[in-house]
Image (cartoon, rainbow over all chains, first blue to last red; front, side, top):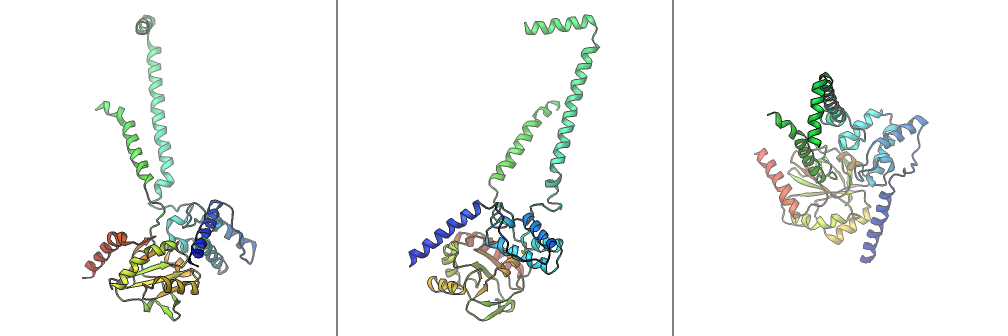
Length: 161
Length: 177
C-alpha cells in the first residue's frame, strides 16, 4: 500500500513537471463573466501577473496550484466590481513586486526602468568624444603645409620601412 | 593621473564581472514575504480535527505556523524537526493544512505523528493567499501579539532551525524584555 502511495507521488510529480514544461499554453478557463469587458480584463490581468510558484510563467499559463487559486481570486474580484488597480494592489500586498511582469515605478525599480537610458547616454558621450578627437586629428593634418606634409610622410615611411 | 583613464574600461569590466558573478548565485526562487512585521491576516476556519478556529485561538506566545499538506513530500523531511520541537516543548507549532483533503490530512497525522497544537484547515487556499503562501512547506514565526516576524520557504530542518529561527527568536525576546 505504501509503495503504491509513493508511486502515486512520483507519477504526480512527473505529470506536474510536464505541465510546467508546456507552461506557455494558456489554461482553459471555465470562469463565467457578465460581459466581454470583464473577460478581457481577466485575460489581461492573468497574462500580466506572474505565478509565484513556477516563476517564469504568468498566471494564465501556469498549472501551479497557487496560480489556479489566484485566477479564481481575480475572477471573484472582477465580479465583485473591483478595479484593475484594486486587484493589482491585492496581489502586491500579498506577493510583492515579484507578481508583476511589468514592474511598478518605485525608487527600487528606478534603475530597472531608466538604467538602459542611462547607459545609452554614457555610450553617446563616449562616442561623441571619440568622433571629436578623430576630427581634431584630421584637422591638424590638413593644417600642415607642403614641406611639413612631405616630412610627415618621410617619417611614416621610415617607421614602416 | 592622466594615465588612469586608460584603466577605466578594466575597472568597469571588473565591476560588471563581480556583479554578474554574484547574480549567478542569487536565490531568486525564495520570495521575500510582504507580511513581515504585519499582523497575521484574520481567519475563521475549521481545524482539521473539526472544531471552528479563528485568530483568538492562536497561542499568546511566540509560535511557529507551518504550512503543510499530505501531498507534500518535503513536509515529511521537515516533520521530525517539528516533532522534536513540540515534544520537547521548545515552541508551540500550529499547522495550516493547505489545499488538502480532510481524510488524507488525518491519515497523514495518524501515520507520521502530529506535532501541531492544531491544524487550520485551508481547503481552497484562500487563507494561504492572504498569507502570501506559494507552496508547502512554508513556516512563519509569529510573536505573542500575533505579528508575523519571519518566514522560511521550503524545508525547515535542524540547520535552518539553528541558523535562522533561534537567532530570530532570541532577537524577539530581547526586544520584548
